[in-house]
Amino acid sequence: MQSTMICIDNSEWMRNGDYSPSRFQAQADAVNLICGAKTQSNPENTVGILTMAGKGVRVLVTPTSDLGKILACMHGTFSLMLSKLSKMVKETTWAMRLSEALANRLALAKNV
Image (tube, rainbow, N blue to C red):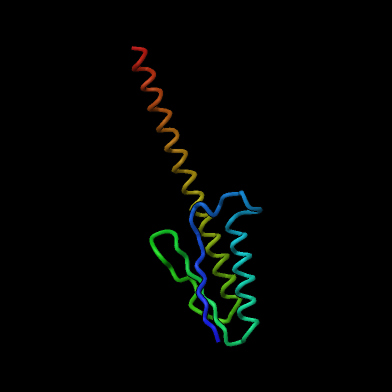
C-alpha cells in the first residue's frame, strides 16, 4: 500500500502557451496519468493533491483512491486560474493606462 501526495504548480506561469494547449493542461495530463497508474496498481493505494502558489501550500484533496475526486479538483484549480486571469487583465490595463498618462505628463513637462 502506498500513499502519494502530488504537488502541482498553479502559479501564473502555468498559463504560458509554450506547451500545447498550456503548461497547466500538460501538468493535469501528467497528474491524471500518475494517479491512474498509482490507483490501478493496488486498490489500497491513495493519492492526494496540493498546490504551492498563492498564499501558501493548500491541500486540495487528501489522499484518496477516488480518481474522480482528483480529476475534479484539477478542473476546479484550472477554473480558479482563469478567474484570476480576468482580474490580472483588468489590473494590467489599468497599470498601462497609468503609465501612458505619466509618459504624456513627462512629455508635456519637457515641452514647457
